[in-house]
Image (cartoon, rainbow, N blue to C red; front, side):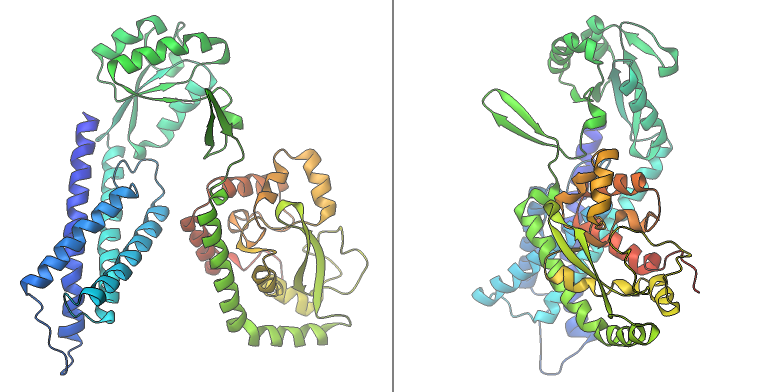
Length: 462
């Protein structure tokens, strides 16, 4: 039943996107040529030619959306990633439309009208999808639009999956029961043994089978897969090494052998890596220009606050464990303990002016030059000094996975409160999650959280 409902939702979603893009085209023309009336420009807004162009463009755009998999279940998709993708695709579509109209002279539309069209089409489609997602999540929490699941197994991961389903009712999954050779009442209803799975699938309306076999039960895998394939039931597997599995593994094939790349990240993709680096270059260059007057004032304040250099330069560990010099405005009196020691809230080395710029993270503004030079990124795990890296890599699992990406001025750990002298294990866990789940939407989310309060830390002003 859920598959039929999903197809209906997908078709309605596609048709509504096309309709909203069509409406956005004329909304842009009305704003440009009716509300912003120009005596020297006369455009037949409601001509058949304009309608044909708008209709054809709308159809082409929903085909592009299909290619980029913008239709389907929203259960596992991050909405921020979906929004960023829509804005990007609409932008590319608008640029393509400008080029096409310029080359063919089919209709004569101003570039400002195309800009309004891009803005309206993005706004309309995103607003609709946000509303649809909110409505679906609401009704799923009420018990509608459920995907019915049967779990194969009764071990640790079967129990964990069933608990996760209960903790996330908005995702719309219902566990009808589990299949196992032994019963565990705390897991719910036992539907039968592994040998009975084919009959269970025949007599129950199952949307998906989740296989959560324990290592000693791996001999039943072939039988379970055969039963699911015979009944045409979609299936997912929770591997018994789930705790060691990254969020987005890459599977490579060599002959008959499947290799799971356990440390693949989205930024291994050259296109995404180039896009992130381009954003770093453009963003850091712009921010240097905007904050240069402020940096000059801070430099003067540092110079007057205590003897010593304006900039504090410290060796940090960057991408691929390469060392670089990170720059900050000096906030402490010159001592010999900068190479290994973390500062504390009541550190006697801090100057009064240094306490102020540290409170509002203004001491980190020179790191824009580190970003521009390619040593850092605007967003990523915070870099550590070699002393701490050598120490933590022996004690904290996956610590050096952080070095697969450029360190950042701000990051997922920092905007979630794990900055400065805080629990290093929590910081590393947040950094690893960021690396494995990176997206442009996530970077923008971190950037917004940093601007909206993330720059102010808990240090007290002296």
